[in-house]
Amino acid sequence: MGIPRGEGASARTIPLGFTLVELLVVVAIIAILMAITVPTLSRVRRQARGVVCQANLRQWGMTLSMYAQNNDGHLPSRGIPEIWLLRGAFLLEDPNAPQDSLHQFHTRDIALCPMANKPARFGRFVGTRTRDGQTMSFEGTAGSTFGAWELTVPTPVFHASYGFNGFVFSGLSTEQRSLADVLGEVDVLALKGAARIPVLVDAVEFSLRTAVLEDGGSPPWHEFERSEGGRPGAGPMAHFCCINRHNEAVNGLFLDWSVRRIGLKELWTLKWYREYDTSGRWTRAGGVKPEDWPKWMRRLKDY
Image (tube, one colour):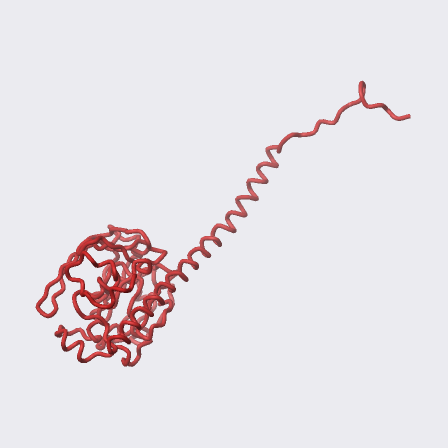
């Protein structure tokens, strides 16, 4: 005969929670899973933003190609085309804005790389541009690796994180020529080597024109974000587009309207203007050695 449950029967105690050891094990497992998944998710997020950045540049390619085809192969030359192209239809308050067909294009949504969509305000830039006897002023603050530049003059205030190779608006020439000379001479659709001529690149200011004179200058001695005051180290190229925005590269649009990644050291090998030496001292063809580069760039791919 079995023992009846009730008085005299011992009841088993059932624990209602985790012991300290079990809780520590659970916490450790969660920490391990986080350590595995967070970097992966971060990498996937960066890759997705890189895809959107390239999609923006492809839209720019279609816009500029359409403009050139409708204007006998010519790109804009009046005013400061790097500014009013980037701002497109949003130039109604700009007294220097050319009133022509480009104003039908709305470019604000494609002026920002998703990796740099908020103004960084790293240092102020001020300048003027004179063409055909007309002088135009501009002011703003520079961007950074992961920050947009800001234009305050001419108004309205505008943010973007790409920069134009300004030489494409003057026939890839470094000479100051009149508008009539430019329009009468250059058909960008017929230029040879278009796949090596950059048009629009991830950058910290709106124009790369002065950045690439003297064959690009010296590379930045420090990564942008780690340099004093947020400004990069010595060298013209350093102040504009040699930034580690897309995993040791920037994205760029070329004159054949193709879009691709550009390795940071590759910047010194591109055809920025007609006289630019693509085999200069900072290229493998020019004899650069790995130890010649700043420490932060030595591990990057050589070109």
